Length: 144
Image (cartoon, rainbow, N blue to C red; front, side, top):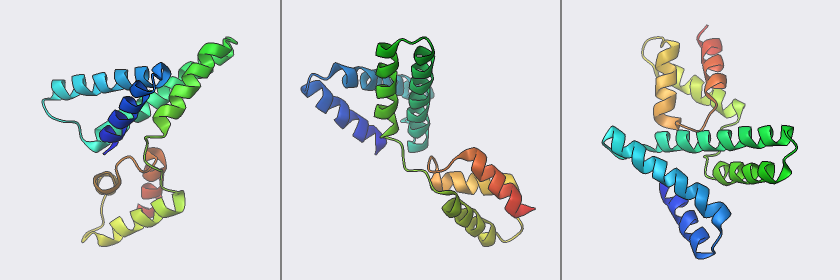
């Protein structure tokens, strides 16, 4: 689903001759194709989300680095890329909802699960929709 959205956005950017949008999306799609070829299968939605997140984070870091150098033009370019990739990321669960989901996972287990079991079940059902550090802390707290 995310891959189709990115392909559609790139096609629209190319038709509009928007090089600032089509170029980073084209680079991303090339990386997806290469990674897919290397692993010998199409990438999962979770893997794609992780790649998009990495692209957004890298653009943010570059924008901040150029901002420190007072190079506004390049800083703006990378902030734009950060926004571009961020809009493809799934909405993150609020902490209260994440806590509720983890409680349900724990409650549905026959024996008391370990933290790794909870995290695995969470990833299978909600991959890319939560902050991993927060989820691990909540799971640890609820299992204690």
